[in-house]
Picture 1 (tube, one colour):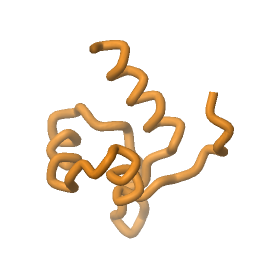
Picture 2 (picture 1 turned 45 degrees about the vertical axis):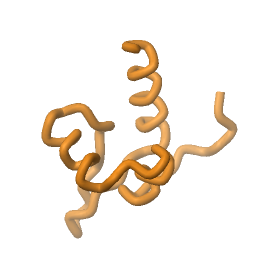
Picture 3 (picture 1 turned 120 degrees about the vertical axis):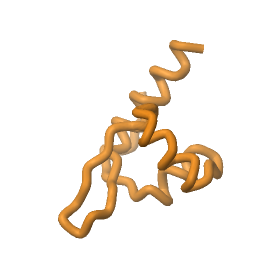
Picture 4 (picture 1 turned 90 degrees about the vertical axis):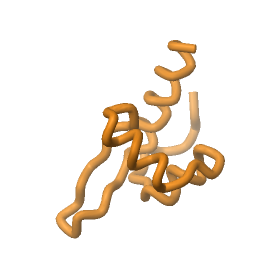
Length: 64
């Protein structure tokens, strides 16, 4: 279990965590419904909870 506290990540931070996935790829995954759940802020920016990113990555590992 991770010792990091849960936090909201920007799309750029998520892309970095994923090892440099392109922004275009991430938004394509969103269009296909294959990206982690995100929150849309009032300024229209997206944020992803770290716990949601970890859950999503875990679900990919189980499917492999």
